[in-house]
Length: 229
Image 1 (spheres, rainbow, N blue to C red):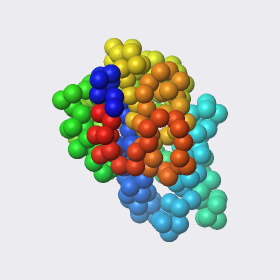
Image 2: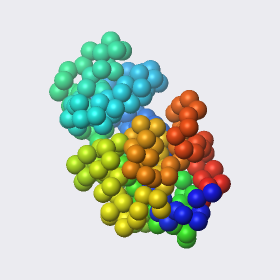
Image 3: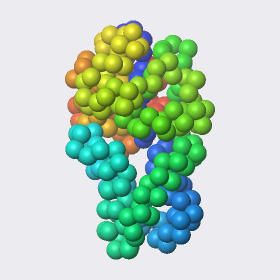
Image 4: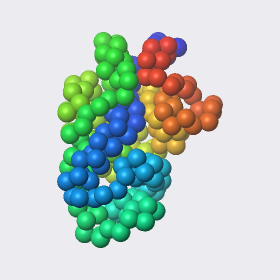
C-alpha cells in the first residue's frame, strides 16, 4: 500500500519493539529482592502499569520533570497498596530500576522478523521519548541497534512526542520528507497523532487495545506491517 512512496520507516521503541512490560516486571522482581521490599509483585504491577502510563502522559505534556516521574510513579503505587516505605528507599529503587531495566532484553513478537524484512528495502529509524541514558543500552543489549540509521530521543530534541519538533528533527536527521516516511508506534496521542500532524503516514500498533479509530492504519501484530510495506 505504501511501497511506492515510503522510503523510511520510523519506530517507537518501548511497547512497540522492546517489550517494556515484561522487562519492567523482571526489573522490579530483581530490585525488590535486592532491597528487601516485600510486596506481592502481581498486585504491584496491576497498579503500576496504568499509573506509569498516566505519569508518562504528564511527562510528555511537560507537566512533571524526569526526576518527579521516577519518584512519583513509585510513591503513588506504594501508597495505593498501603505499603509503608520511606522516601530514601523509593529514590534508591528508582535509581536501581533505571540501572537494571536495560539488562533485560525481551522484544515483542515479530520484532526481529519485521526488521529483517524491512532492512533490505527501507532505511529504519527510532523516535523515542525514553531516557537517553538507557534507550541506547536497550537497543544494543537487545541486539537490534544495527538496524537503525538514526535514533532520535526527546532529550536530544528538547521536546517530547507528540510535539512536532521531534518529528521534524527526525526527518531532518534522516534526510527524508514526511510524505516518504511512515511512523509505527503504540501511542495514538504521541506516535500517531503527533506524526500525522507533521505529514507522516502512520501505522498504529494497538498493543493497549485502544478503541478503533480512523487515524491511519491499525495492526495488532508487527508481522501485519508486511501488508503495507
